[in-house]
Image (cartoon, rainbow, N blue to C red; front, side):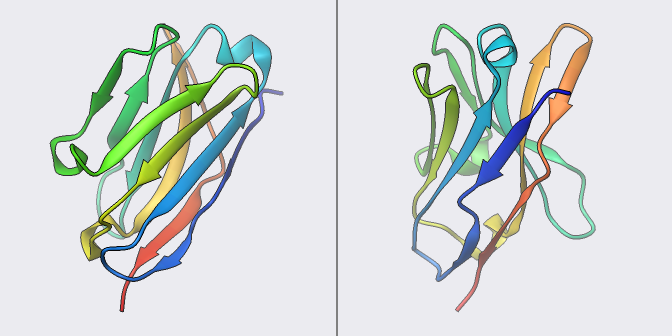
Length: 115
């Protein structure tokens, strides 16, 4: 089975920072677009950021300037650095690997921004 394992979620105060990590297998990491999605209670899952093997990136307008997606090819890991966090960033964050008609999801990690 394809394995995507997220880590780094937690509880932070508004204005704080977190870094999420997603470790993937080599066969997936080297051939798929890697991304982060999030789903808040009662809302649709939405794309937060994505990165290609050529390091081309895409961000949701709501996180531009605050979040940064990156990848470490040696560690086969994609990261999401989240700065200046707001309460509206509270959601379950999911790692995603996508190529053509196939896609894979991690189990999700909870991010809660609250005072």
